[in-house]
Length: 446
Image (tube, rainbow, N blue to C red; front, side):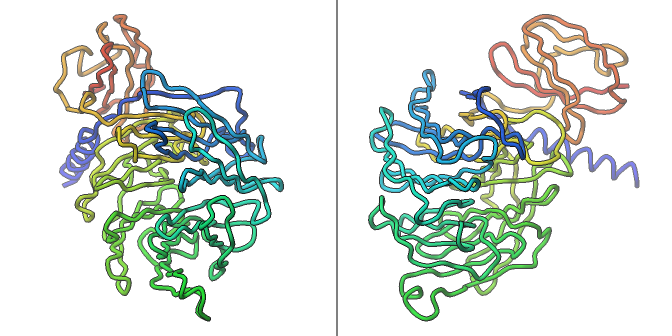
């Protein structure tokens, strides 16, 4: 029975690994002159994207401010604009962004000199112009979300209250409508037509109606649903609603906690219908996720980008990945912070806290298939040494829990490698060929 259990576990692990594809890296920007934060050594934080004047613009925050990249021509990507933050330097950890009617709204969660910045981006990729830079409304905010249908900006965990709501009828002159303070704080929110899906840290998850008639009345707001007890409940960090408003994906920011899919089609009966994770490490942690069609894109901290097919929300399937952060340790908070998948080109923007901006593409040049490869690594099984033929650039070796145990730069040279301290067992390798195609295979070490 024990042998059968081991076999079943092995099959599940290998099936998980070989059902995925590796995203194709188009571009990576990392400026070593930008100082990392004192807290987590992160030079970078959130990313966002806009399409202006038929140009696709990727946006990433750093400890210095906000960087704009024209990624329309993937053969000629460049930084086209920069806006210095009101507060800069190693004290900065978080910045956050949303856009509305040709303006980018930028906030920071640290520093007494922080402000709300409103940046006119209508002339991109030529230039940007800061039209509002003030702490009159608030100085710091952890996250913001703009409900474009109702022209309202939601400022989460801001200077004053758990969440503040501002009218953007005049986009460059926000006006405070209402302050919500029913919980300790709101870490993040997704809002659609005045219905706010609130991620409230250790106070759980709430759905609240902030329509104008409620705000104008004595009720001020109406709580439609609340979920404080659910499987693997931790620090309720962030989430995203699908297009038809039936499911909500929720990330609890704790090491080793699963992602949750909620059925929110009936506010009187909110329920968790599935839980899942990156299947990399017992301490893996999801950070920010966005749903596009039936695909869920998650910036998964140390595990990089992870993409899940959620067309069947009861059985999410991990289909794509890209490792933006290579160290194996899952301690602290490092790696992929944010993701933006909405460009018409289908290029995907990912921000990594330590390694910067990535532009990725999901294409079929990186199909993963077990044993559908040439015999370029031999012998197999392996005793003391193994050789790699000369048609590959890089070699990476993973154990059955997907921890990386070896990485070698081959550069098209035939090499012989000492197994060194690799224990006996089954391992999986990833090779990048000289033509940039990716292949996987299995090795057995005696």
